[in-house]
Length: 242
Image 1 (cartoon, rainbow, N blue to C red):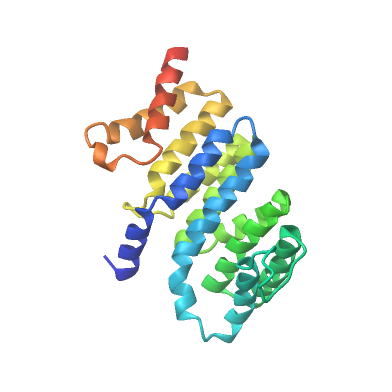
Image 2 (image 1 turned 45 degrees about the horizontal axis):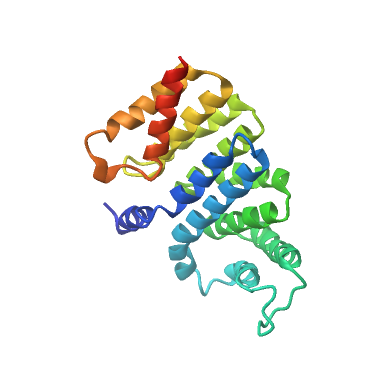
């Protein structure tokens, strides 16, 4: 296993992304607009985690400086009187950051550009511009590694919130092709696929997906994902309905 893969495995143990995504699960049916916001938050978290090495590698890269300008704005507290940069409110701050990030997206490539897209997604959702996130999810899905995974995951949740279940399922299934066998997102994808089948009204397929997930950890509680208990409760509820 390469050093990079080892770092990814260790960082995934922190469950930061899974925790954020669980919030989307909790609100998905009754608050479709919140789904995109919470999913975007999870994507930004993982993007930040896996982009750390990229930042270190490109600190002296001239093309990366535009990205750092956007990053600096995002790290500024809008109501901090001591801050070097001043903004009227969070909306103004996100608009300013987005402007810099769009420059980074248009002037860079590869991992730096992917990082800019991750942050742009967060800004757009904060500004209530959920529709504009689609182009970034699509672009990320065509990149490599964790960014492709995040792109497909974002597309799946985007279309699920839109109740376009066929596209959501396609995106989630495409996401599997971007993961290695040790990726912590695989189980989450199983859960999201099950939830999509449930929303679509296909209870039998939802149960099938959940049973695979539940049986996988039935005898090894130490490795159960953070959303295991919710998946188990959902499975039990669906079986009662049949």
